[in-house]
Image (cartoon, rainbow, N blue to C red; front, top):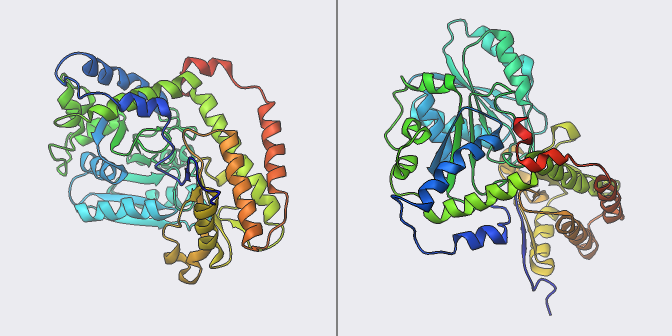
Length: 415
Protein backbone atom coordinates (compact mmCIF):
# COMPACT_ATOMS: atom_id res chain seq x y z
CA UNK A 1 0.00 0.00 0.00
CA UNK A 2 1.29 3.43 -0.94
CA UNK A 3 -0.18 6.75 0.12
CA UNK A 4 1.54 8.33 -2.88
CA UNK A 5 -0.76 6.79 -5.49
CA UNK A 6 -3.01 9.25 -7.29
CA UNK A 7 -2.07 12.48 -9.03
CA UNK A 8 1.45 13.48 -8.05
CA UNK A 9 2.12 17.12 -7.17
CA UNK A 10 5.40 18.50 -8.50
CA UNK A 11 5.89 21.38 -6.06
CA UNK A 12 9.21 22.46 -7.56
CA UNK A 13 10.01 26.01 -8.72
CA UNK A 14 9.38 25.23 -12.38
CA UNK A 15 8.26 23.65 -14.54
CA UNK A 16 5.04 24.49 -12.76
CA UNK A 17 1.72 22.67 -12.87
CA UNK A 18 0.20 22.93 -16.35
CA UNK A 19 -3.56 23.63 -16.30
CA UNK A 20 -5.77 21.03 -17.97
CA UNK A 21 -7.15 23.59 -20.48
CA UNK A 22 -3.58 24.39 -21.54
CA UNK A 23 -2.77 20.71 -22.07
CA UNK A 24 -6.01 20.26 -24.01
CA UNK A 25 -5.24 23.26 -26.22
CA UNK A 26 -2.04 21.53 -27.38
CA UNK A 27 -3.80 18.29 -28.30
CA UNK A 28 -4.54 19.00 -31.98
CA UNK A 29 -3.04 18.33 -35.41
CA UNK A 30 -0.28 20.55 -36.75
CA UNK A 31 -1.83 23.73 -38.21
CA UNK A 32 -1.08 25.78 -41.28
CA UNK A 33 1.75 28.17 -40.35
CA UNK A 34 1.32 30.53 -43.32
CA UNK A 35 -2.27 31.74 -43.08
CA UNK A 36 -5.27 31.36 -40.86
CA UNK A 37 -5.93 30.74 -37.20
CA UNK A 38 -2.40 30.30 -35.86
CA UNK A 39 -1.13 33.44 -37.58
CA UNK A 40 -3.92 35.50 -36.02
CA UNK A 41 -3.33 33.83 -32.67
CA UNK A 42 0.38 34.72 -32.62
CA UNK A 43 -0.25 38.36 -33.49
CA UNK A 44 -2.97 38.50 -30.84
CA UNK A 45 -0.54 37.34 -28.17
CA UNK A 46 1.64 40.44 -28.59
CA UNK A 47 -0.61 43.01 -26.85
CA UNK A 48 -1.53 40.55 -24.12
CA UNK A 49 2.07 39.67 -23.34
CA UNK A 50 2.71 43.39 -23.03
CA UNK A 51 -0.14 43.66 -20.51
CA UNK A 52 1.40 40.92 -18.39
CA UNK A 53 4.76 42.72 -18.29
CA UNK A 54 3.25 46.16 -17.76
CA UNK A 55 4.64 47.72 -20.93
CA UNK A 56 3.50 49.51 -24.06
CA UNK A 57 6.81 48.93 -25.85
CA UNK A 58 7.99 45.79 -27.67
CA UNK A 59 8.03 42.03 -27.16
CA UNK A 60 9.82 39.22 -29.00
CA UNK A 61 9.08 35.49 -28.75
CA UNK A 62 11.66 32.71 -29.07
CA UNK A 63 11.92 28.94 -29.08
CA UNK A 64 14.25 28.78 -26.08
CA UNK A 65 14.44 28.27 -22.34
CA UNK A 66 15.62 30.93 -19.90
CA UNK A 67 19.29 30.27 -20.60
CA UNK A 68 18.67 30.84 -24.29
CA UNK A 69 16.90 34.11 -23.53
CA UNK A 70 19.88 35.25 -21.45
CA UNK A 71 21.94 34.91 -24.61
CA UNK A 72 19.30 36.47 -26.84
CA UNK A 73 19.05 39.56 -24.66
CA UNK A 74 22.81 39.99 -24.35
CA UNK A 75 23.52 39.62 -28.05
CA UNK A 76 20.94 42.27 -28.89
CA UNK A 77 22.23 44.75 -26.30
CA UNK A 78 26.02 44.41 -26.56
CA UNK A 79 29.05 44.48 -28.77
CA UNK A 80 32.12 42.40 -27.99
CA UNK A 81 34.22 44.14 -25.39
CA UNK A 82 31.29 46.07 -23.90
CA UNK A 83 31.04 46.10 -20.13
CA UNK A 84 28.09 44.92 -18.06
CA UNK A 85 27.46 45.31 -14.35
CA UNK A 86 26.01 42.12 -12.87
CA UNK A 87 24.15 42.42 -9.56
CA UNK A 88 24.34 38.96 -7.99
CA UNK A 89 21.99 37.55 -5.35
CA UNK A 90 22.17 33.88 -6.27
CA UNK A 91 22.86 31.26 -8.89
CA UNK A 92 20.94 32.87 -11.72
CA UNK A 93 22.54 36.29 -11.44
CA UNK A 94 25.91 34.53 -11.51
CA UNK A 95 24.82 32.49 -14.53
CA UNK A 96 23.71 35.47 -16.59
CA UNK A 97 27.05 37.10 -15.93
CA UNK A 98 28.87 33.94 -16.98
CA UNK A 99 27.02 33.92 -20.30
CA UNK A 100 27.90 37.57 -20.89
CA UNK A 101 31.55 36.81 -20.22
CA UNK A 102 31.56 33.80 -22.54
CA UNK A 103 30.12 35.96 -25.32
CA UNK A 104 32.99 38.41 -25.06
CA UNK A 105 31.69 41.07 -22.69
CA UNK A 106 33.69 42.50 -19.81
CA UNK A 107 31.80 41.60 -16.64
CA UNK A 108 31.92 43.59 -13.40
CA UNK A 109 30.17 41.79 -10.56
CA UNK A 110 28.57 43.20 -7.44
CA UNK A 111 28.01 40.34 -4.98
CA UNK A 112 25.24 40.93 -2.44
CA UNK A 113 25.15 37.49 -0.85
CA UNK A 114 22.49 34.81 -0.91
CA UNK A 115 20.21 35.95 1.91
CA UNK A 116 19.97 39.74 1.48
CA UNK A 117 18.67 41.83 -1.38
CA UNK A 118 20.46 44.32 -3.57
CA UNK A 119 21.89 47.50 -2.05
CA UNK A 120 20.92 50.32 -4.44
CA UNK A 121 23.57 52.62 -2.93
CA UNK A 122 26.37 50.25 -3.94
CA UNK A 123 24.94 50.09 -7.46
CA UNK A 124 24.82 53.87 -7.62
CA UNK A 125 28.42 54.09 -6.40
CA UNK A 126 29.61 51.58 -9.00
CA UNK A 127 27.92 53.55 -11.77
CA UNK A 128 29.26 56.89 -10.55
CA UNK A 129 32.75 55.40 -10.64
CA UNK A 130 32.22 54.56 -14.34
CA UNK A 131 33.09 58.06 -15.52
CA UNK A 132 33.47 57.04 -19.16
CA UNK A 133 30.15 55.16 -19.22
CA UNK A 134 31.80 51.91 -20.27
CA UNK A 135 28.99 49.95 -18.61
CA UNK A 136 26.34 49.35 -21.26
CA UNK A 137 23.87 47.31 -19.20
CA UNK A 138 23.03 46.54 -15.58
CA UNK A 139 21.85 42.94 -15.18
CA UNK A 140 19.51 42.19 -12.29
CA UNK A 141 17.49 39.12 -11.33
CA UNK A 142 14.00 40.01 -10.10
CA UNK A 143 13.62 36.68 -8.28
CA UNK A 144 16.51 34.28 -7.91
CA UNK A 145 14.97 30.81 -8.02
CA UNK A 146 17.81 29.29 -5.98
CA UNK A 147 17.79 31.71 -3.04
CA UNK A 148 14.15 32.90 -3.23
CA UNK A 149 15.35 36.50 -2.96
CA UNK A 150 13.15 39.14 -4.61
CA UNK A 151 14.93 42.34 -5.59
CA UNK A 152 13.54 45.86 -5.69
CA UNK A 153 13.79 46.73 -9.37
CA UNK A 154 12.36 50.23 -9.04
CA UNK A 155 15.09 51.01 -6.49
CA UNK A 156 17.75 49.90 -8.98
CA UNK A 157 16.37 52.30 -11.58
CA UNK A 158 16.40 55.12 -9.02
CA UNK A 159 20.05 54.35 -8.27
CA UNK A 160 20.90 54.42 -11.97
CA UNK A 161 19.09 57.73 -12.42
CA UNK A 162 20.78 59.20 -9.35
CA UNK A 163 24.14 58.28 -10.86
CA UNK A 164 23.13 59.87 -14.15
CA UNK A 165 24.23 56.75 -15.98
CA UNK A 166 22.88 55.85 -19.44
CA UNK A 167 23.19 52.05 -19.13
CA UNK A 168 20.28 49.80 -19.97
CA UNK A 169 18.47 48.12 -17.07
CA UNK A 170 17.95 44.44 -17.95
CA UNK A 171 15.93 42.22 -15.62
CA UNK A 172 15.62 38.43 -15.46
CA UNK A 173 11.94 37.72 -14.71
CA UNK A 174 11.98 33.99 -15.46
CA UNK A 175 10.85 33.08 -11.94
CA UNK A 176 8.64 36.11 -11.37
CA UNK A 177 6.67 36.94 -14.53
CA UNK A 178 3.05 36.02 -13.95
CA UNK A 179 3.66 35.54 -10.22
CA UNK A 180 5.01 38.83 -8.87
CA UNK A 181 4.00 42.39 -9.56
CA UNK A 182 6.21 43.65 -12.37
CA UNK A 183 5.77 47.11 -13.90
CA UNK A 184 8.26 47.37 -16.75
CA UNK A 185 7.42 50.88 -17.89
CA UNK A 186 6.65 52.34 -14.47
CA UNK A 187 9.90 50.97 -13.04
CA UNK A 188 12.03 52.14 -15.95
CA UNK A 189 13.13 48.70 -17.13
CA UNK A 190 14.67 48.55 -20.61
CA UNK A 191 14.85 44.78 -21.12
CA UNK A 192 12.87 42.07 -19.32
CA UNK A 193 13.15 38.36 -20.00
CA UNK A 194 10.95 35.40 -19.09
CA UNK A 195 10.25 31.80 -20.03
CA UNK A 196 7.05 29.86 -20.48
CA UNK A 197 7.32 27.15 -17.83
CA UNK A 198 6.74 28.99 -14.56
CA UNK A 199 4.18 31.73 -13.94
CA UNK A 200 3.08 31.62 -17.58
CA UNK A 201 1.82 28.03 -17.06
CA UNK A 202 2.98 26.69 -20.43
CA UNK A 203 5.38 23.79 -21.08
CA UNK A 204 9.05 24.66 -21.20
CA UNK A 205 10.35 25.68 -24.60
CA UNK A 206 9.34 29.30 -25.19
CA UNK A 207 11.13 32.46 -24.08
CA UNK A 208 10.25 36.14 -24.23
CA UNK A 209 12.02 39.48 -24.26
CA UNK A 210 10.25 42.76 -23.65
CA UNK A 211 12.34 45.79 -24.70
CA UNK A 212 12.02 49.56 -24.54
CA UNK A 213 12.59 51.97 -27.40
CA UNK A 214 15.92 52.82 -25.77
CA UNK A 215 16.97 49.18 -25.85
CA UNK A 216 15.90 48.81 -29.48
CA UNK A 217 17.95 51.84 -30.44
CA UNK A 218 21.00 50.63 -28.53
CA UNK A 219 20.69 47.25 -30.19
CA UNK A 220 21.06 48.69 -33.68
CA UNK A 221 24.83 48.83 -33.23
CA UNK A 222 25.24 45.58 -31.24
CA UNK A 223 27.76 43.42 -33.08
CA UNK A 224 27.09 40.35 -30.95
CA UNK A 225 23.71 40.00 -32.60
CA UNK A 226 23.19 36.98 -34.82
CA UNK A 227 20.35 36.33 -37.29
CA UNK A 228 18.54 33.87 -35.06
CA UNK A 229 18.60 35.95 -31.87
CA UNK A 230 17.96 39.29 -33.61
CA UNK A 231 14.90 40.81 -31.96
CA UNK A 232 14.26 43.33 -34.75
CA UNK A 233 12.05 41.19 -37.02
CA UNK A 234 10.56 39.30 -34.08
CA UNK A 235 9.21 42.50 -32.54
CA UNK A 236 7.31 43.59 -35.69
CA UNK A 237 6.94 40.58 -38.00
CA UNK A 238 4.86 40.45 -41.13
CA UNK A 239 4.89 36.65 -41.29
CA UNK A 240 4.52 34.05 -38.56
CA UNK A 241 7.92 32.46 -39.22
CA UNK A 242 9.56 35.86 -38.60
CA UNK A 243 8.35 35.69 -35.00
CA UNK A 244 10.59 32.66 -34.47
CA UNK A 245 13.33 32.79 -37.09
CA UNK A 246 11.77 29.78 -38.80
CA UNK A 247 9.05 27.23 -38.05
CA UNK A 248 6.99 28.37 -35.04
CA UNK A 249 6.35 26.24 -31.94
CA UNK A 250 2.81 25.49 -33.06
CA UNK A 251 1.42 23.49 -30.13
CA UNK A 252 3.16 25.77 -27.63
CA UNK A 253 1.41 28.77 -29.15
CA UNK A 254 -2.01 27.22 -28.60
CA UNK A 255 -0.99 26.43 -25.04
CA UNK A 256 0.33 29.91 -24.41
CA UNK A 257 -2.83 31.51 -25.82
CA UNK A 258 -4.94 29.54 -23.34
CA UNK A 259 -2.61 30.25 -20.41
CA UNK A 260 -2.53 33.98 -21.18
CA UNK A 261 -6.33 34.02 -21.44
CA UNK A 262 -6.54 32.39 -18.00
CA UNK A 263 -4.20 34.98 -16.47
CA UNK A 264 -5.98 37.95 -17.97
CA UNK A 265 -9.41 36.59 -17.12
CA UNK A 266 -8.34 36.28 -13.49
CA UNK A 267 -6.74 39.73 -13.71
CA UNK A 268 -3.06 40.34 -13.10
CA UNK A 269 -3.69 42.16 -9.81
CA UNK A 270 -5.59 39.13 -8.58
CA UNK A 271 -2.94 36.73 -9.88
CA UNK A 272 -0.26 38.60 -7.93
CA UNK A 273 -2.45 38.79 -4.81
CA UNK A 274 -3.13 35.04 -4.98
CA UNK A 275 0.57 34.26 -5.16
CA UNK A 276 1.29 36.58 -2.24
CA UNK A 277 -1.40 34.95 -0.10
CA UNK A 278 -0.32 31.39 -0.90
CA UNK A 279 3.32 32.23 -0.20
CA UNK A 280 2.23 33.76 3.10
CA UNK A 281 0.57 30.49 4.08
CA UNK A 282 3.88 28.66 3.69
CA UNK A 283 5.69 31.31 5.70
CA UNK A 284 3.08 31.14 8.48
CA UNK A 285 3.59 27.39 8.74
CA UNK A 286 7.39 27.74 8.78
CA UNK A 287 7.19 30.38 11.52
CA UNK A 288 5.50 27.82 13.75
CA UNK A 289 7.54 24.78 12.74
CA UNK A 290 10.79 26.67 13.25
CA UNK A 291 10.08 27.50 16.90
CA UNK A 292 11.72 24.16 17.66
CA UNK A 293 14.57 22.60 15.72
CA UNK A 294 16.73 23.84 12.88
CA UNK A 295 14.21 24.81 10.17
CA UNK A 296 14.90 28.29 8.78
CA UNK A 297 13.86 30.33 5.78
CA UNK A 298 16.80 31.33 3.61
CA UNK A 299 15.45 34.91 3.46
CA UNK A 300 14.54 36.29 6.86
CA UNK A 301 13.00 39.60 5.76
CA UNK A 302 9.47 38.98 4.38
CA UNK A 303 9.77 42.05 2.12
CA UNK A 304 12.67 40.34 0.31
CA UNK A 305 11.01 36.93 -0.13
CA UNK A 306 9.67 35.73 -3.44
CA UNK A 307 5.98 34.93 -3.81
CA UNK A 308 6.89 32.21 -6.32
CA UNK A 309 9.46 30.06 -4.49
CA UNK A 310 10.64 29.56 -0.92
CA UNK A 311 14.11 28.26 -0.04
CA UNK A 312 14.56 26.63 3.37
CA UNK A 313 17.20 24.86 5.43
CA UNK A 314 17.24 22.03 7.95
CA UNK A 315 20.18 20.30 9.54
CA UNK A 316 22.05 18.04 7.11
CA UNK A 317 20.85 15.52 5.87
CA UNK A 318 17.23 16.23 6.86
CA UNK A 319 16.48 18.29 3.75
CA UNK A 320 17.21 15.35 1.47
CA UNK A 321 15.45 12.92 3.84
CA UNK A 322 12.38 15.14 3.79
CA UNK A 323 12.28 15.41 -0.01
CA UNK A 324 12.80 11.70 -0.55
CA UNK A 325 10.13 10.71 1.98
CA UNK A 326 7.55 13.11 0.56
CA UNK A 327 8.05 11.76 -2.95
CA UNK A 328 7.84 8.14 -1.85
CA UNK A 329 5.02 8.34 0.68
CA UNK A 330 3.02 11.54 0.09
CA UNK A 331 3.02 12.01 -3.68
CA UNK A 332 4.69 15.41 -3.38
CA UNK A 333 8.06 16.40 -4.85
CA UNK A 334 9.87 19.46 -3.52
CA UNK A 335 12.74 21.26 -5.21
CA UNK A 336 16.36 20.33 -4.74
CA UNK A 337 18.84 23.01 -3.66
CA UNK A 338 20.66 24.87 -6.42
CA UNK A 339 24.12 26.25 -5.82
CA UNK A 340 23.96 25.44 -2.12
CA UNK A 341 27.18 23.43 -2.26
CA UNK A 342 28.95 26.60 -3.34
CA UNK A 343 27.77 28.33 -0.19
CA UNK A 344 28.04 25.52 2.35
CA UNK A 345 29.33 22.20 1.00
CA UNK A 346 28.79 20.31 4.24
CA UNK A 347 25.13 21.40 4.52
CA UNK A 348 23.91 20.74 0.95
CA UNK A 349 21.57 17.96 2.12
CA UNK A 350 19.93 20.33 4.56
CA UNK A 351 18.43 22.62 1.93
CA UNK A 352 15.19 22.29 -0.01
CA UNK A 353 12.87 24.56 -1.99
CA UNK A 354 9.11 24.79 -2.42
CA UNK A 355 7.72 26.10 -5.68
CA UNK A 356 4.38 27.94 -5.42
CA UNK A 357 3.95 29.49 -8.84
CA UNK A 358 1.45 29.44 -11.62
CA UNK A 359 -1.63 27.22 -11.56
CA UNK A 360 -2.14 26.57 -7.86
CA UNK A 361 -4.68 27.28 -5.17
CA UNK A 362 -5.17 27.10 -1.41
CA UNK A 363 -6.02 23.41 -1.18
CA UNK A 364 -2.86 22.50 -3.10
CA UNK A 365 -0.74 24.60 -0.75
CA UNK A 366 -2.45 23.22 2.36
CA UNK A 367 -1.90 19.71 1.01
CA UNK A 368 1.85 20.32 0.75
CA UNK A 369 1.97 21.91 4.20
CA UNK A 370 0.11 18.97 5.68
CA UNK A 371 2.41 16.54 3.88
CA UNK A 372 5.51 18.31 5.17
CA UNK A 373 4.24 18.26 8.75
CA UNK A 374 3.45 14.56 8.35
CA UNK A 375 7.01 13.98 7.14
CA UNK A 376 8.43 15.85 10.12
CA UNK A 377 6.57 13.47 12.41
CA UNK A 378 7.44 10.33 10.43
CA UNK A 379 11.14 11.21 10.20
CA UNK A 380 11.39 12.54 13.76
CA UNK A 381 12.65 15.91 12.53
CA UNK A 382 12.46 18.41 15.41
CA UNK A 383 9.73 21.01 14.91
CA UNK A 384 6.86 22.68 16.70
CA UNK A 385 3.48 21.31 15.72
CA UNK A 386 0.74 23.56 14.42
CA UNK A 387 2.08 24.67 11.09
CA UNK A 388 -1.07 23.51 9.31
CA UNK A 389 -3.25 25.41 11.79
CA UNK A 390 -1.20 28.57 11.30
CA UNK A 391 -1.48 28.28 7.51
CA UNK A 392 -5.24 27.74 7.62
CA UNK A 393 -5.70 30.76 9.88
CA UNK A 394 -3.58 32.87 7.53
CA UNK A 395 -5.55 31.79 4.46
CA UNK A 396 -8.89 32.25 6.20
CA UNK A 397 -7.94 35.86 6.87
CA UNK A 398 -6.58 36.33 3.34
CA UNK A 399 -9.76 34.91 1.79
CA UNK A 400 -11.83 37.47 3.68
CA UNK A 401 -10.01 40.41 2.13
CA UNK A 402 -11.56 42.22 -0.81
CA UNK A 403 -10.08 41.41 -4.21
CA UNK A 404 -9.89 44.05 -6.91
CA UNK A 405 -12.83 43.49 -9.29
CA UNK A 406 -11.35 45.73 -11.95
CA UNK A 407 -8.56 43.18 -12.40
CA UNK A 408 -11.11 40.99 -14.19
CA UNK A 409 -10.52 43.20 -17.21
CA UNK A 410 -7.00 41.81 -17.43
CA UNK A 411 -5.43 45.28 -17.44
CA UNK A 412 -4.53 45.54 -13.77
CA UNK A 413 -0.77 45.64 -14.28
CA UNK A 414 -0.97 48.42 -16.83
CA UNK A 415 -3.55 50.65 -15.19
